[in-house]
Length: 236
Image (cartoon, rainbow, N blue to C red; front, side, top):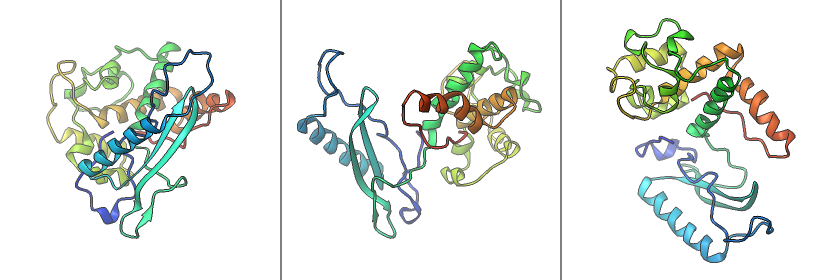
């Protein structure tokens, strides 16, 4: 997940920047064994690493969940949910989900590939009109793998843009204000723009908002299988 180390601490509300869904190796037990709780030694080591990372990365607050075989076996809260008001992180603190949503966007795209409604090597202008000319050679696969060369609109502006609801036209305009980072397929660079375009393609094919697609095709199935569903997804 991308994030800013220079955000005003008084305005930061416990951004999740790492460690959510952290998995610890609990034991080298056989697969049929019962779920094991992390040892005190493992938890102390994790705690030390988290404290170090929070200090070095200027992270105000974090909640850590340790899971084993689909079950949460440990939850730890660290730091402040609101620095200005000195509100500590708790089990009920709401975090910004940020780029954790990208894996769900990718899964939704690959479900369309599985349905043969989308091709990995399809050019993106097959689904999106009025794109800048420099982007016309980009493929769906390159959006998924951050190899499109399309600049990251968040990096161009600022990470405060996560707080704004920009239109697709505004996002494309911001990203197009900088030349391509490299020719499509000729490099790798993290791009929020790429996944925003991917979400637009999914919405065009499905004919409904991305949140509805994720709920209908992924989250509702997780609920039916007994897996605790995640909160509403963002589209980046």
